[in-house]
Image (cartoon, rainbow, N blue to C red; front, side):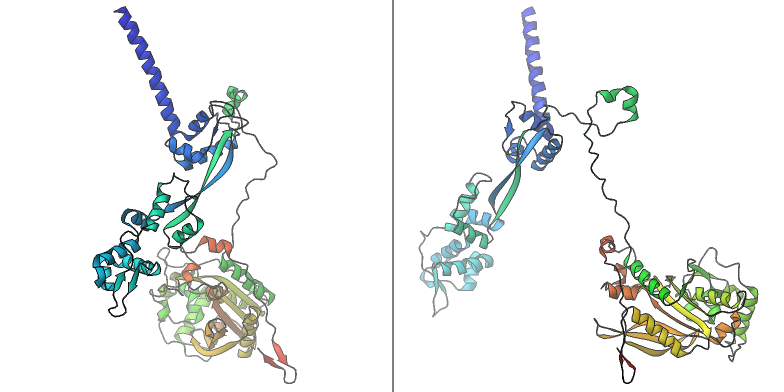
Length: 547
């Protein structure tokens, strides 16, 4: 019994040792790093001849082996030498040929079976299939395995049943060659013909020869990247291996922000307007009352634009609490009774309608406030030129050219005895500075300007006239309640920021320019915006501008 017990213990110990070895080998097979270091442990000259073959023999993914090898190379555990192997792989059509024969052999077989009577093309297609017939018939005629009878138009075999299927033999030779070592099985001409028929394709496989590095060890010890407080407190830093620090390297460059194309065009417009002597209006308040947005502009309270279908009204707070009372009374009187040669709208002016809060539908709401301040400033009225470029909101159906929010560019000049000619001259100067010289003006209607004009510019890419802005002179009914002198006139014009930006950057859908569908790469790669001031040539004899 004692002998049996000793024998049992020795047998159990041997089994435990074998099990541990098996588990270790299995773990190495699952862990590419351990498998690589283990393969190099046999001696100083140990190496892995090819990482691809090594991965296959150990049941590992080759990409995982390459990744682990490069990681080990970074810590000098191993050295890598790149290997390049070229070989041919068969496509689906080639695999079908190896199995069933080439298309020309199958066509030849069908023609031999038909005998001297031959087959018409539809009959041949019915026997071998349309795809096989199309390829095989042409190759049979080219190899002179078949001919076409002039009288009947049928195809007749001219080769015998002992004809060798060369294509099948060539593809079989490639398929049966050792894996990854079939590039030299066939001559170059044969391979070129097979590639031309798209039966095979050349693959280049990258792999590595792996040898021991300067810091090789059978087991990898992960180096610490940071010295922590815990290491200092415990003294563990004395035993810890740290990664080498390169104090000469620069940190990764920090990607800064990029200006959106709209902001680039806005900056250019702003620079042009400042050069023309305009001052920028404060337009950072998007919520306005109906009083400033509509009423002060002499827009009737029954106007369709004030409907919820066209304007976004604010739910909370729904009404404003601050309106200049004296100015409110004068605006109300102008609407109900008229003045300055006008009979007004003969309507009941409602305070609850005037105090409604909304998202401004145009920056002219700010223009009216600036003109009111200009008329009532200490020292009285002084001529001024204002501009603004900011966001406005309208309840519109969205499509390729319309959004519910967009940017409006607006300019105005307030001075004594201005005329329509001053307005046209100012507009022409601005558009010339952004490279548009061919302009046309068309009479239009706006509730708060008279006369009013739409501005059209010639689009060289579209080769047609396109509306690019709106303009006019503010009506006396709008200016008189503000307290401006009777001989003061205000000329104004406006355009969207999106349309010239889309033209400048060749964007055909506004949703690709502004909104949640914008491609951030487009913002990053958009070139700078520059508008060239176009000089107007003049006829020296008549002094007539020539565009």
